[in-house]
Length: 373
Image (cartoon, rainbow, N blue to C red):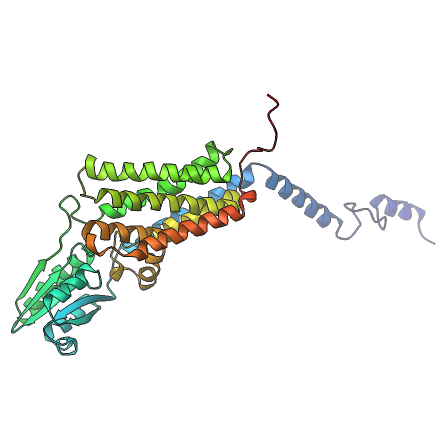
């Protein structure tokens, strides 16, 4: 017979009673701990500390990505191929010339040679931004005409390399800049800076409209984005040209480009705000700053960028803006529609997406109620 005291003792331990968290029930303490952890996690997610923690991690990652993207694109620009015009001599023939081979070896890149029958034709190709330099092969000499306005970094690289190669092979080399940069912008960075200002202020303006003018309805929001873009573009152009004298701008055209850039940037953020709500800054920053600005060709010419960035940069708003501004300032009679089309397409798509999903955009106000007064 069993010991009654043992049975009572067993009951005291709760054996077999099926109550969770009671000693004697297998797995009960673990289940209780799991419920406690779930409850704490739920409370944390509802507290203000959860979004703050997420933002902490995002800002840290964004800082690294920002530094990495600009360093990757600009710290050590390396040419892949440099479009170069050749006059008087067929390209296959001059390709075998000792000077060209020496240049390619020194650059670690290919001179993509294009033959032109006359120097004027080659110069037109420079003005149309099809080539970055003109190579003329003379008997026992070489002449290299670079275009600083086409790409300051490319022109500098060619100017530094050509005399060294000529000296090494015993061939005198004459280098001249046939289209130099303006005196107020010797490094060719001013156009990149004004574009950067238009891009960043463009989407920051859209953010501030959402914060301080959230009662604006969709059409009103677009209208005010147009307004601050026009005024902002005018201010940037006026400060750089009239105020500082750093650049002589074709004022009306540069103003239009800057205003279109600001509007496009603002509407890109507004589109992402309708799609992603409070996290809209992430795709905007990634597209316009992490990817768009380093690949724009403003700080480092496209032939010197990593090949992927060099290809996609001109299809993004910052690259299109830099290209349009650069052509307006230095190649006024050879402006291309492509850059304006890229900016207009991004602006149109952003407006269309925002308008389609405007019901998801935070803000607005109820205009259905009739004022009794």
